[in-house]
Image (cartoon, rainbow, N blue to C red; front, side, top):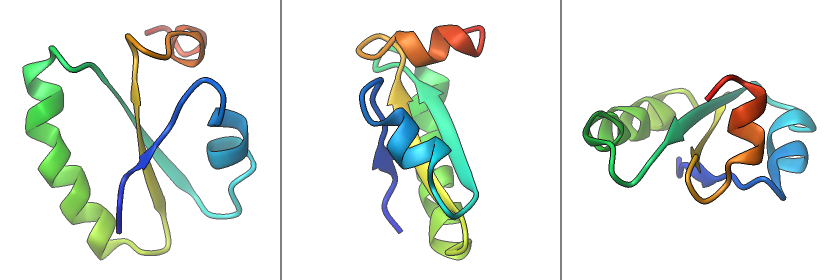
Length: 70
């Protein structure tokens, strides 16, 4: 299953209004650990098809992460 790109604009629709549980990974392009976790999250998303997975770049979309203390 693909990791959905989440933005400030689509957060409510894709995450909050999703009928399935949603796992959201906050990330940044400059973050080494974020890059290292991506293949792991992709693998888990392929195994857990009853959960949707997404990633949000905190530098490009800062509004939602700020609400969660990032």
